[in-house]
Length: 446
Image 1 (cartoon, rainbow, N blue to C red):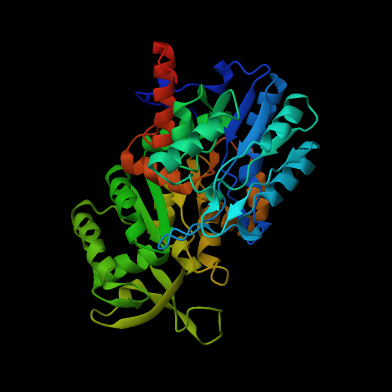
Image 2: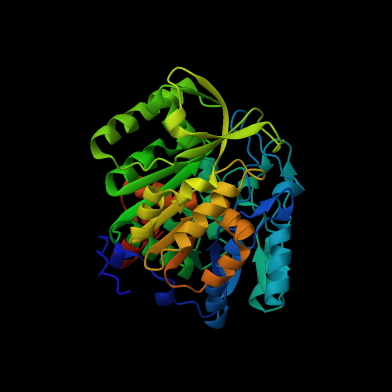
């Protein structure tokens, strides 16, 4: 299939690229999104593997690497306290890279203060950097960036941490497409060093352009555990799609607002928020309703006799229902649903349709139905979406890894944020790279 020429983004020529950087003999600070550890175990190495091309390129061109990523949320949002423990350590990631690259990856340790995390980077790292330059070690991997007190701080704390990071290296490379939050390690640091986009960042932005300027018909499939977190991206997506398919709690919320019913676990506030979408769709008719949902009496295991299939056409206004925990796989055999998916030219999926790990039939049926469309661009966004695909359809996943019409984004939240902004270059860490290039061209470096 020949794709039409993609519309060029305004900032496309302004993005500084790693291939234009002078790396010979330089220490390169690389921000990656290796947030793949849960309770001390790597859940899926996909996001690590996708950055190896950038790392190899740096070393092949004479650069020496210092890596950094965030893992989880060690900072309590209410109290501000930071907990540094093995559950959010980067140690498993460093060990994985050592096995993958056959090279020693050094993880420095710094003093941790109770409640405050790591206060800063001290001079003990200088010996490791000397070893790095002399090729005695293959790389350095800093502790979880969110263990550092200054990572999410503003004012002097953030400024101090930025200067400490900048003092480690000669060049900064951002290859963390999935980390869209403007923190010190993704945003502020780009104002202090010559800064460039890594190969993964470039590839993700390029494919994001194909979502923002799709071949039509364009079908989006969106699900989620909360409606309020998806309102912005969902409203923006609705404007640009030809058809929208919903799943998870988002679909439950829509059904409540559309049919004046109550489904367990859906808040009144979310129902009221969804009424705007329902009102829009009465005119545009873009939402494709999945005709069969799985209702359950309990939120948990799949207990025989405690769940059943309910047809949307049988919903009774004013009635309360149990938990909507999955989409019955028969929904994807429905003539209208299958027809919409089968005739699409671009399909974007950010969806786990059921309550995992027990209700998975809907997600599997969705993925297999999408694969029957052999002509469409298929874009999957988000770690949970990808993990579900790999778990439920392992054979299909392996078969499509090298299929040019499939693309798996490493950061679903970043894709939705860019869709909400209607700009592939709109995320602040990307804008920081562009601003740095402008400053370098004008000779305004720090």
